[in-house]
Length: 301
Image 1: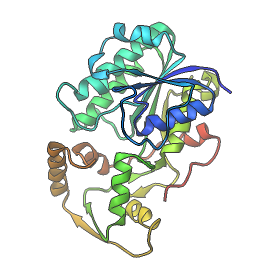
Image 2: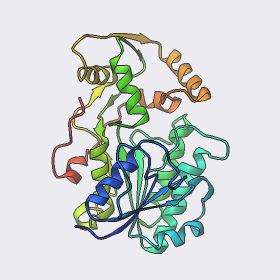
Image 3: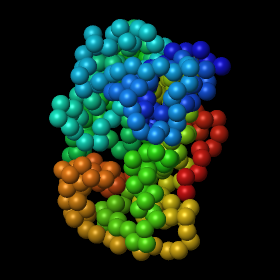
Image 4: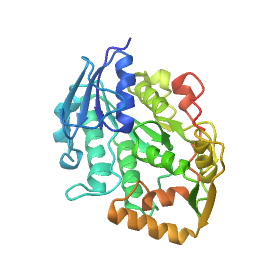
């Protein structure tokens, strides 16, 4: 068993809950960082009520300097950041949550001698037109130049109970008809949230030698079966029925317009950023998930 103190920011979110469960199973003393301690009424699939888990409030959009994070960083062996926002809200910007706050945490961890594990996504680019994606890319660049004991986990599409996007895609897969943008030519390598949580826990507690951090501090994580988006939806459908569904292609420009409308209305997990990601491959190269799990990744479809 591992006896380390770990702060999981976003520990009540989809990825965070699974990381908390895995860290607890390893024997870690876990603190869940959340915007509303003890007041979250969601029915979490992964419970965080074990005696070894405490909660405290952390609002990344309001804490964007290293000084604001230093005292916190000094209390832990590792800080795991699972926080991300799909869409901006009043007072909560992409720049603050995805770039400035992670940069500040990394700087604080550097001063405190604390490991900082940051959850990001595959397919980011400085040239991305989506601010959701470009802000995440700036956050990665800031962390990697911080001089801290940093690790960036770039994760592919996640599947599992309780995830906003995962639940939506499972619902789409059950329909007799679904829509695919003609621009969605990229492949994805979906992984389960359980596997992601286990991998992140290893990144928090593993030694530099075990994780081979001297060679590479970026861990690209995904499943072992790259699929196009249509094939992925059909694979999800086969979990429920062997009846074939109709796939209706629509022009990429129309899908892009729909993504912008979804962003304005805050409707569904489909966003302009996800439209961009669908246009190119989001496959880990190399895939380091098996390296962290010590086994083959769980098959999604």
